[in-house]
Image (cartoon, rainbow, N blue to C red):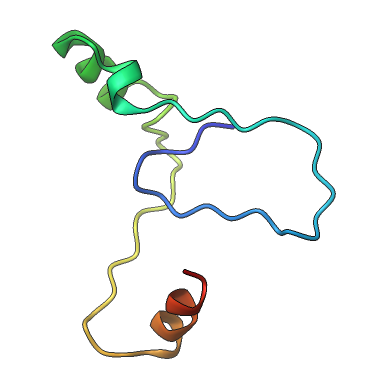
Length: 71
């Protein structure tokens, strides 16, 4: 599973998982300009079926209150 940069992801602390999480930073992946271009355009991180980002307005909604509690 690949998760795009700047995406929210969550693992249930009570879930039964077996596996590893590997975090690769920009400094690791994009050591040259061509690397950055590849990462922006590869299907691994640019899925055509990907759910778009949700834009929230500035008002304090129930959702923003819940998200703030998760910090």
